[in-house]
Image (spheres, rainbow, N blue to C red):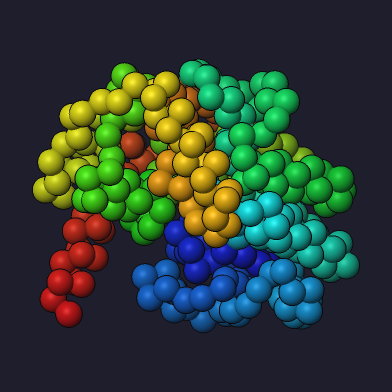
Length: 332
């Protein structure tokens, strides 16, 4: 079996390669991304890295020179802010290009990494299942383009599996926790809302296992929520990580209504200065202030997905990796 993985040099893509590389059924992996990261490159005779831009049709064609059986699309612009065009190009145009070539190559399965942000509606949401009603208007361009990419995949008639992981954490995370840590170090992070919001997190190793299961499952043409199935208090978890890396806990709280209004003003100013991301967005305030958990019963029963790494274990994995990475930097 030959696999094509996009976003392979990123956090999730690299961990998927690490997870599936030793499976005897997999003979070759074509791994593509925009640029290398020393931390995310796996040296193995089964893996060929090809760097390039998935927005370029000719580059995408070149990825299919070797027969491809399964495409795993992890590539995405994941950000709380950005232009419609940038999200369209990164999340929708790339999906179109990959699907066109997958059809030409008679790919047997297409696994798409989507997002539960498509459900988000600025309300406390508990045990959301895959058929829960979606908001009439998606929360931002990221969620909108990810949903549209899902729809394109369904319409393509290629056998598919769509995975919607909630908040990936663990070794190699350069997005969620590092961003919060930077904000804290800059004295910009406060507890948003009452600090009692409960959320799901997902160990990246568990997500890699979900992708592995998706390669072989007979229950395809389905969408699956993925999480650790272990809701936690978000701010207690953030503070546990901060404490573990010797940063003082966050104690000050700011009411949600004040933060939401401030985010509205910041977004308005940012629109007047294109290219400048606001310090706060309505989406980031909502995500950090509202409870948000997923029902993963469908993934358990149809995908045979059961979380193996606990949330506390994945937090410890991140902490040890983060400490080592920053100690190594300080010694250079």
